[in-house]
Amino acid sequence: MSRILVQDALAATAPRDSLLLQGWVRTRRDAKAFSFIELNDGSSLRGIQIIANATLPDYAHIERVTTGAALEVRGKLVPSQGQGQKWEVIADAFTIVGEADATYPLQKKGHTMEFLREIAHLRPRSNLFGAVFRVRSRLAFAIHQFFQDKGFFYIHTPIVTASDCEGAGELFRVSTLDPKNPPKKPDGAIDYQQDFFAKPTYLTVSGQLEAEIFACALSNVYTFGPTFRAENSNTSRHAAEFWMIEPEMAFCDLQGDMTLAEEFVKYLIRDAKEHCAADLEFFGKFVDKELLKRHDFVLERPFQRCTYTDAIQILETCGRKWEHPVKWGDNMQSEHERFLAEEHFKCPVTVYNYPRTLKPFYMRVNDDGRTVTAMDLLVPGIGEIIGGSQREERLEVLRESMAQHKLSEKEYWWYLDLRRFGTVPHAGFGLGFERMLMFVTGVGNIRDVIPFARTPGTAEF
RNA sequence: UGCCCGGUAGCUCAGUGGCAGAGCAGGUGACUGUUAAUCACUUGGUCGCUGGUUCGAUCCCAGCCCGGGCAGCCA
Image 1: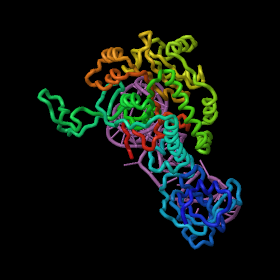
Image 2: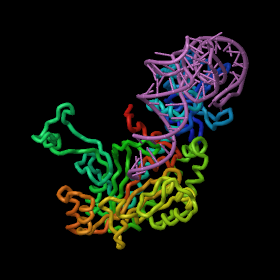
Image 3: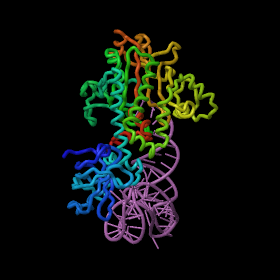
Image 4: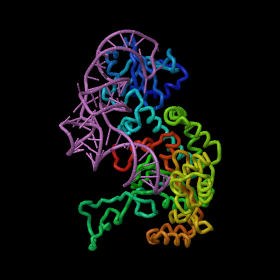
């Protein structure tokens, strides 16, 4: 007899004379002549109720069927006599595959997220984290489906990179040199000529520059992979290792970029609603009561678009006192972004055309000479979920921007070559996968949507 | 990294300058088509660590460690 998943057993349309279930015991309740066992195998939020009659030969071992134990059950699928479930299984036999003693940490009660984080090896067996990681899997699939359906090609950009610039902050160094005794040059500096790649190398902070290469060949491409930032960030929305999706489109301007971003976000929410309904309902009940309403709200209306200059105007004239002053030319602070998305527009907002001085060298300079075609998509509750831009395709303007950022043309020779040979307007953005997952699930801390989060001081598991 | 809050039983928390508490979990028993079952009894403690003040510190003070929130950096 082959195994049936709990999800499929629960979805049965007719009774079955025999089936095999395998999973982990969530709880057992003993009655006089039999026991109720709730079995969950992770295939769905719901478990299935097993009836183990005291007349079973295996019943002698029933006290070892404890919360957390791995169990195999053979039996019949029948309509439930009790309330609360359509089907239940009358066991013909059960086998305890792996016991779980009284020290099993997951109890039949609510646990705090902080505690569950400490037992990241067991938390996928909880309702909440089972749901989070089922949705995570579906979301990853939906991302590929969205792009593949549109004719985008999936590009694997390198994880190890030699470009340390781009202003993206601290990088993780990749080296095989002996940290206690690195080879030195005559002037005392470390001799990276002798390192594995014969130059200093780092973990990638973005696949964008490489994605541009492929967009300028295959037209529409995307990357989806791990990204690393060695920032000492201690917030609920930053991780040192996270996954990012970066589409890049040739013959595309900022407007097209913003349109794709909006379509993409909506597609992912719609897909989750369609394929993870039970899990989302659970989040709506126990994590964020407003979640489902917010999903619908976001799907129903067009995202707002607002230039940086207009946004500053709104912030200046709204009559509110700001902790951080609002001034054209300064970065917008969290309180400002949150106000725009959560209070002023009450909707995801794309802010675009930022001051040139605030943004990296590769963004296209607008005709006004002082702004660039940058865009940030801000969503209520999380803040920035997407950052993107149209790229500077004009060789001379790019060279000038690189000079302003004190970047060496020699190191970016290949990037400049793209502007020498068949240059074309192109644009793209980066979507933080975990931030999107936070938005979809309502989970408030990025550490709880990553199986094993890497944050400053923490690399357990 | 800065500011703020916290660390007491396996978990969630209360509490006091003078013998350490509850609910849940665990154990024992009862009861029951139950579903975070219920009822009775019960086991369980380096009060984060180090030092100081004190006759006496879990409590007050300092430093450190760990966790969380917010901010910065960003996705």
